[in-house]
Image (cartoon, rainbow, N blue to C red; front, side, top):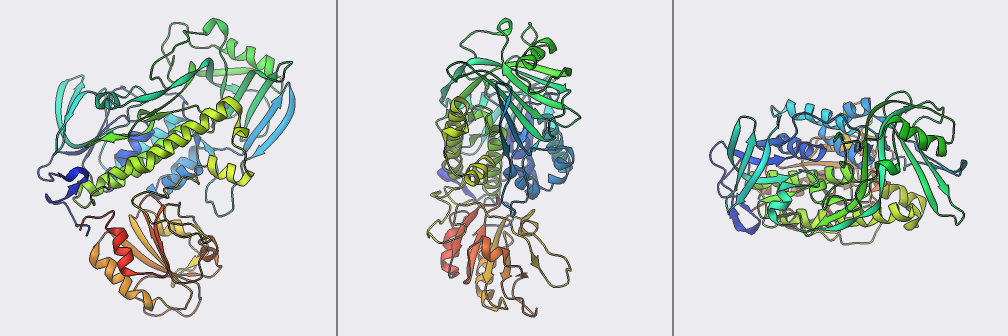
Length: 561
């Protein structure tokens, strides 16, 4: 299973033949926001011939999506760009809440020590710049001022009509991926439903500097309660890079309010951005809210941009059709509560890209691409529902223990149990098939004099087979490693993690020692066990005891025979 290179005999869902001859475009990605850039980077990293088109002539200088979740940072670690992102980001340490001018609560964003990254704030244009730099390193750039006009698919590919300043161009691609936002041309061209609605209230959004001395790295939520205890005024400030710089949101000033209906499929945040016509709030509008609600006397200055928006929430009925798929805001939009939107879209793109790469390479098992909708649409549905509840009633709308709440907001509880691709049997301790593969430290190997993290061993790799053994050697794993190597040559990396710190010797697979017991503890394992880790960092299977027939059966769900 799992061919090397490309072959005309590869099959994709629906038994369509992937034509891998010629030098055309494998995948056309529409939309160069964080989601489209992620999809293009991951496709190019795997050698897929990809074009990325964007209708806008330049990157927008607006801090729309700001929050970067720990799970996204883990994915950026796998891509090799997390260092560049962290150099630009601001740590999000927590939130200070004030009610009627009095300190009410202080939320600390604390995660378990084995989680390698915390919460961060990074303006969307910086996220896009970092991703674009990575894409350029693969020899691919963004084709700006280029718009998808129409498309038509058949059993072997998609014919797309593009319009650029130089004229129209017809492009033939094997697959089309729409990351083109809430007004998606791709979604509309597929005729997908986009059910949902919008909250009636409008809000103002602005990027300003504030002259207060509140603790660094903390968001601020200041509310006013009326005589009945209901919130009738609110101010939310999210820290951004730069001294005293925040993205502030608040209820709209009456003179800036628009129509009540709004856009049928708008994403809210884009409404009024740079549109002129008097809809952009000025410093005086922001200052008026600060004078009412700020926990400290402060003055807003250095306005960079502003907007008026309405909170929308919508979800498609499916994430694609045939060779045309969608991701990000093209598939789901929801309140900005908890900074879930961009991060959810980036995970969409990751889930789709590694599967598309196998399909293009003629190595995808039947049903692999269909699993994109099966895995990601439930996630989109949950995020839309949860953020709508939180926008209306606060995070207390989903009561639970603080640890679970924090892990969920960090998107570390997103998983695919029940997916057709994974084996999630068993109720013992540690992660099961479909769960995120947690990081751990303290792994050592011969020659290297420093400890490693598990994520160091997963970075830049596709499927990884981790074989855990309680004994001093990995000799018993030789036949299993050979079976995987023969069945999927060049597609799976295999290594062993051994609990015993005995002397090193010749081994059929690379060996790492769990001298501090972190792997054994976090993975809840004491007996020989095989963990198959997918390219997106989720467990495809957990097998105890390891079995070559069972492991090959799981691989057959992903790789073509």
